[in-house]
Amino acid sequence: MFTSLRSRLWLSYAFVITVALSIVAIVLLVYIARNPLLSRQAQQQLSAVRDLLAGNPQRFINNEEALTNFSQENEVRVVVFDASRELLFDSNPDQPALPFPRRNLFNRDSQVALDANGDAWLYASSRMAGGRVLLVAAPRPRIHVLGIFADQFFAPIMQGWAIALLISLMFAFMLSRWVADPLQNVVAAARNYPSDDIKPVPLRGPREVQDLTKAFNSMVTRVNSSQKSQRDFVADVSHELKTPLTSIQGFAQALLDDTADTPESRKQAAQIIYNESGRMHRMALDLLDLARLEGGIADLKMSPVDVKALLQNIIEKFAPQAQRANVALQLKSIDELPGLIGDGDRLAQVFTNLVDNALKFTPEGGQVTLSAKQAGAEMELSIADTGLGVPKERLSRLFDRFYQVDESRAGGEDHGTGLGLAIAKEIIQAHGGRIGVRSEMGQGTTFTINLPLDAVQK
Image (tube, rainbow, N blue to C red; front, side, top):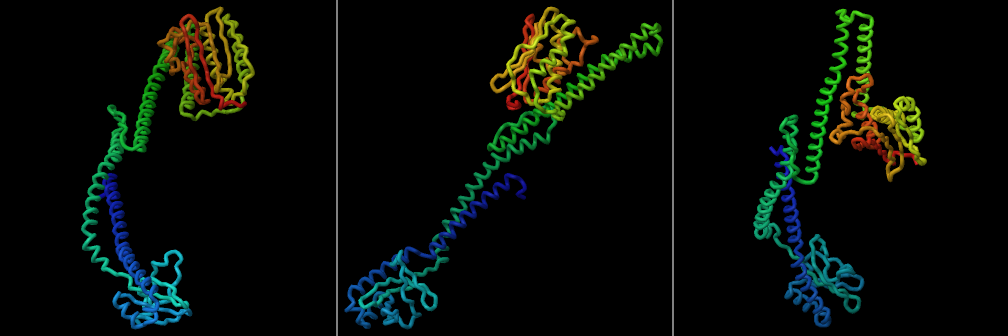
């Protein structure tokens, strides 16, 4: 019982209402017990009697018999003290003695005194001629509080309590549905996951519950994307390994069956086996590198990097290859740049891959240009070539694993693993930057890298 969120909300709401009504009843009971209205009426009567006595001292104060009769007629107790606070007269000497009145600078007409037995008296006092003090008192009004409460207030309070409880339970039911139903939808979706027909949980309920639902939907989306990526990854790896494994198996079989019966054919078979196994080895290293980058566990050694010197080193490294291909490789004149905080080796790996691709796909007489500049809050680096370009429908897939733009090059001796651009993208993202590409057929291709300046040492 009361194990669900909805029932606990009901119980909590009813408890709060019950406590609130109980506090109201207690405050009302205390108010009735103190009875301020009757006390004020009695105090006004005492003040009127005091003023009458004080205004006729010869008639009353100096005549004890008249004073006694007056007190009995007005149902008050009259006490007179001398200047030394000694009792001179008490109209009710058989009752417990009253103390000398104390001064009350804040409310002289509303004073309470306790007699010798501890009973409360209301009184009004006044100073007379000769230093005498007149005190007119009456017992503080008392009523049967519990009786009045039971007779006059218990029924309406109970009626109000019942109505308030009923309304509170109705609101608690709506509130519990507002809060609990979206949470139950999230729980149901989590229990049914994974499922092919799972859909995003609708955003309902208070803002905190909606935030939880958004986080759950986002988590499901990321998990589904990761699982799809893993399935695609396995399919791609299987496809890419099939060709070299087939070649290795076929030429190895040729050697075993003596099909390659001449020294030249055996050397050719061994060379192909060697090349394909080397390709598989490079692919395995690239896959491991890519997995570490995508998993965020790659060991990036961050330190100040001289971007201009880095680009000049890339130019010097590829100068012989560019000369053989009869392609102009140049570094565009750049201004002084701030030192980039990054992994110099990883950034060099990115530019090495991009320049190598640019040289391969740029015909003789073409040009490859490297440049860098500070653009607002970012550092912008680019590698532009004057090659044949990339069709627009293929641009979006350039950074996919194993994707080859020029399918005719697949299986060639200089054919790569198809992971270079995917690795380059992960390296740039690990530095907090982004990489993009634009291209036009017959006009060439430009890769642009943007790195945030918050990773720059100024």
